Structures are given as structure tokens and as C-alpha cells.
Length: 278
Image (cartoon, rainbow, N blue to C red):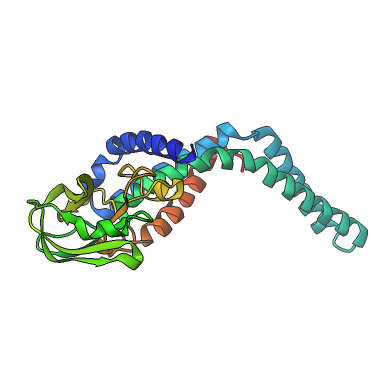
């Protein structure tokens, strides 16, 4: 049930991202990554405002400031100092508790959003003429089918090496060489059953699906672009090894650090304009 829910949420998030993130394909990486971070930072701040108890947060903040002031004014009075420190700890705990609800509300949308952003920034598409490894993993008990698995001919890529079958690891691998740009599909045949995997080729930004996952909610959340294979499917996953993207702002893994830093700065700058107590 959880995997089914994640799959449906991915479909909704993918439909929204397909429209909202379409300009990423034409903008410079640093610019699109910055704009995305600013927008999500302000959106998270607005979501925090309308899902939190702002009046209670303001009162708690005021209590913390009052006790900090008491510490400064009565720094020679040990009893007042200890009492103020204890109250600060209590109010800090209350402030954390007041933040839990908005954080939980934002958790699922942000996980879905990060999954969609990773499609654009975590890896770059293959260039024309570039080689990549494609791996098909089969289910437990389906190792014998590896002898009959085949990568069907395609205009997108040719087979350079393979298939290399590894029954002990329940997988078969091919080394492919790309031929023409665009969003393509690799098709595999296994005992009369057909399985497909998306293949991104080009020199511009486009969504890159690293893996078509198995029927598992966490794998579906990390790889949201393609539907997972059914639990009873002989094929459990298909992976393409894409090259890393090199950039401090929109490169592999670095995009997440940059997104977090810029979104926090954007939220901090927008805070007084939106009147949000945090």
C-alpha cells in the first residue's frame, strides 16, 4: 500500500514538475538551480507560516528573549541565572515542539520535490557516441531466464559489449554506445515478456532517470520518473550508469548543497516581508 501511494504521488509530482521545471532545459544550470532554490525557500517559509501556531511561537520567542535579558542583567545572581537558563531550555523545547507540525506537513512534498529535482541535476544525459553500462536485475528464482534475455535493436544505441550474465548476482549487463540525441526507450525481452527503460541522450538539461526500480516504496521515492516493476515481475530493476554532472551549483550531489544553502538564505531574506515567526 505504501509503494502504491508513493507511485501515485510521484505521478502527481511528475505532472507538476513537467510544467514548472520545463524552463530548466533552456536556462544555464547555475541560473535554474538558483531560481529553483529561491522559489522553494520562499514556498517552505510560506508553508511554515500557515501550518504553524504563529502566536504561540511569538510568545515562546519573547519568553526566550526575556530570560536572555535576565541573564545579562542579573549575571551576578546565581539563583536568577540558573532559573533563567532552565526556563530558556524549557522554552527551546516548546519552540521545537511547535515546529514539528509544519515540518511534518512539509516532509512529504519536499521529498517528492527533491526527487524531481534530482532528475535534472544529479547526472547529465549521455552524449552522442558515448558509452554506458546498462544492468538488468531479475527476481529471486529467475536466474535461469538470464540465458534468454535480450536487448532489442534500437535507433538510440548499439550494443558494444554484452550481454555479460552474472547469475550469482541475478543480473545481466551491456555496454551500449549512443547514436542520436533525444529521449529514447531501451527494450528488453525475457521469455516473451517485454521490459523498457528510458534513455536520455543530448547536450542540454533533461530529466535523467538513473534506474527503473523494483516495487519498493523507498526505491520508487528515489527514482520517481519511471513506474517501478511489479512485485511479481521477473525483471526487478534496470539501471543505466550516467556520467556525473560537473558544477558547484548544479552538479552531481553539489546541487543539493547549493539548493539547501540558497533556499535558507532566501527564506531568511523573505521572513520579515512575510511576517513569519520561526
